[in-house]
Amino acid sequence: MKLDQIYKRLGIDEELFQLGAKTESALAERFAEIDRTAEICQMKVIAAMQKNRVSAECFETSTGYGYNDLGRDTLEAVYADVFHTESALVRAQITCGTHALALAMSANVRPGDEILSPVGKPYDTLEQVIGITPAPGSLAEYGVTYRQVELLPDNSFDYDSIRASINEHTKLVEIQRSKGYLTRPTFSVAQIGDLISFIKGIKPDVICMVDNCYGEFVETIEPSDVGADLVVGSLIKNPGGGLAPIGGYIAGREDLVEQCAYRLTSPGLGREVGASLGVSRSFYQGLFLAPTVVASALKGAIFAANLYEPLGFPCVPGAAEERHDIIQAVTLGSPERVIAFCKGIQAGSPVDSYVSPEPWAMPGYHSDVIMAAGTFYQGSSIELSADGPIEPPYAVYFQGGLTWAHAKFGILKSLQSLKDAGLLPCIV
Ligand SMILES: *Cc1c(COP(=O)(O)O)cnc(C)c1O
Image (cartoon, rainbow, N blue to C red; front, side, top):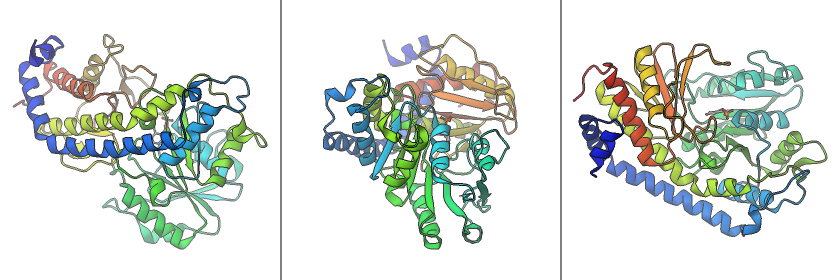
C-alpha cells in the first residue's frame, strides 16, 4: 500500500497528506543539521558509557538500602561525563523535575541566603518551592529570600538590574533555559554562558544553577560546558529518552552535588543509600536513545511550525527560527481550535487514542486546561503530548515525539481535526 493510502486509513485526507509531504521536503537541510547534532550527542553518550565500563552487571537491581549499587553509581559517573561535570546524582527517588530543582536549591542555601532569578519568573511549580506564592515547606519558610530581575522588552538580559540585585546574601542564581510555557524565547547555551560570566564577574562564588528541562541534547554543548555549577532536569523529559519511567538528575560541582545527596536521603547517608529498584537498565538505555529521540521531537516541532505558521497561526519559535528546546507554541486564537488540536494529537497516539480529552480545572493552573497525552508513561512529555490552557491568546504548547514518523503523524492529525471541525480559515 502507498503511504498516502495508509495515512488515509488513519484519517489523514489526501490534501493534508500532500501538504505534509511538501512541508517535510522543504525542511531537508534543517533536518540534516538536527541529525548532525544528534550524532555528536550520541557519540558523547557512547564515549561516557565506554569510559565508565558499563557492563551487564550495571543492569542488576538493588533493594532495601541499596548499598553498593554498581549500576546506579556507574550511571552517575556516566552522567557526569556526558555533562562534563565533576559529579552527578541520578535517582529514581527524585520524583520529577520540580523535585530535582527544589532539591538542588534547598540543599545549597541556608537561612539568610538569597536566590536570584535573573531571567524573569521561573517555572510555575517553582513559585511554591521558593515561596513566591506562599506554600507549606517553601524556602521562604526557612528564611531564604528571593529576588527576580525581568528581561528587557527585547528579551535580552537586564545586566544593570542584575548587577544591582546581587548582594552579600546572594547565594544561588537560578537560570531557566527553556521558555517553559511562557512566551519569551528559550536561551541558547551560549547566551547562558554570557550571563554566567557576567554574574561570576560580580560575585565569583555565587552558585549558578540551570534548569535544563527540555534543553538536553538540543545543542552539542550543555550549560555545564559554559560555567554552570549545577544543571538539573527530569528523566521523563529529554535525557530519559522515553524509557526512564521516573527520575531526575543533578550534575555539577562535587561539593554541591554532595549537598544534594545529603538532602535527598539524609545527612550522614548521602548517596550511599537509594535502591535502584530495577530501573537501571531503562535509565541507561533511555540515555543512550535520548539524542535521537530529542532529534525526532525537534523535527516534529519544526514541522509543526512550518505547517501552522503559513496557515496564519503565529508560532513560537517561528517557522524559520533556530531551536534551543523541544517545546513548540502555536497560537490558535479560539478555545474551539485549542480543543480540536489536542483531540487530534490524542487521536494520533499509540496509547489511549480512542479517548477524547476535555478541558478541566487542573490543580496549579489559573484556567481550565486541556491535555493530550497518549503516552506509555504518565505525564511523559518527551512523548508526543500537548497542553492547551483555555485562555487568551488560546495557544497550545506541545512537545515530544519518540519517533519522527509519529511526531509527523500526530501533528497532521491535529490539523485534520481542525479541518474536520471546520476551524481552518483556509487550506491551500
Ligand atoms: C517540566 C519543567 C519543570 C518541572 O518538571 P516536572 O517534572 O513537571 O516537575 C521545570 N522547569 C521547566 C523549564 C520545565 O520544562
